[in-house]
Length: 227
Image 1 (cartoon, rainbow, N blue to C red):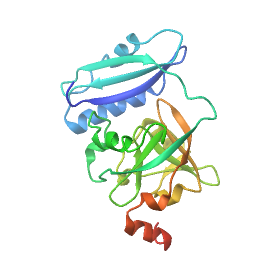
Image 2: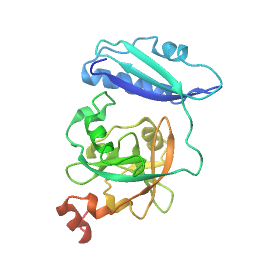
Image 3: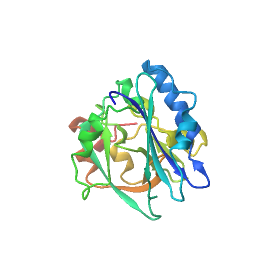
């Protein structure tokens, strides 16, 4: 396929698709915003025809500009309880003013460049900052930092990021709220990364927060000058 819209979701035996309505709504919104033809009316039926068996599945839907969809379902192993991902911050920046990155598409160059900065042994996930040194998102996840009362903080859309389906659900349920975050803000907080496929995954920031910031931003952090 050429440039396409993508949705990745989980299917579980007995329970079916997780958050499938939210995924299809996002697909429709992105199609409308980017000038794609709308998804076929039988998209859900095509999804259901692609799955089955007695084990969880990862289901990837890709849709072309003309509204044609391709579905690939593969076995999915849930992340074991107690897993903690090692997270590092990339030098690659994600432009906050590019609206295309607010849609899940096959345009993955910044995410692939950020992931390539570290080996799998060095990091389980890699975070991208924008040109202002604000946290945007991970290469495959949104970012969540826990406050003392258990409320989760997640970067706002103005920082430049994909509004993930899990992120939207947590905000809607008032378990999370958006707030500008920098690496220095998450160093001493309980950290999670997550998406609709994997759910929330506990994480720890590896490396110096100051090293991840632009020089001017890091100086501002040390002086206590950021909001």
